[in-house]
Length: 126
Image (cartoon, rainbow, N blue to C red):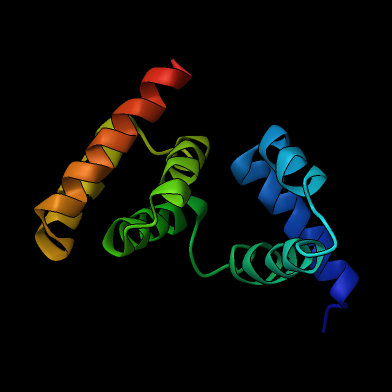
C-alpha cells in the first residue's frame, strides 16, 4: 500500500506529464491556505490513484474525460483536457469524433459548446 507521499509524488509526475509542467506550476503556485489541501487531494487521488491505474492507457482516459466534461458542461476543465488529450496522443480528428459522439448522448448544445471551445483552444495553441 502506497503512502500518501508516494501517491502524491506519483500523482505529481502523471499530472505534469498529462497537463504540462507550466499548467501544474500555475495551479500549485496559486495555492492558498484555502486551496492547498485541495491541490494535495487532486494530486494524490485524481492523478496518483486514478490516472495512474494500469487498466486504461492515457489516450482512453482522455476520451473518457472529454466525454464526461462535455456531458456535464464543465467548460473550463474541457479546455484544459483538450490540451491534455493532444499531449496524450489524440489527434484533432479523434477529438472531433469524441465531440460528435458526445452530441448523440449529451445533446447538440453540449457539442456546439465543445466545438467552440476546441476551436478556441486549438487556434490559440497553434
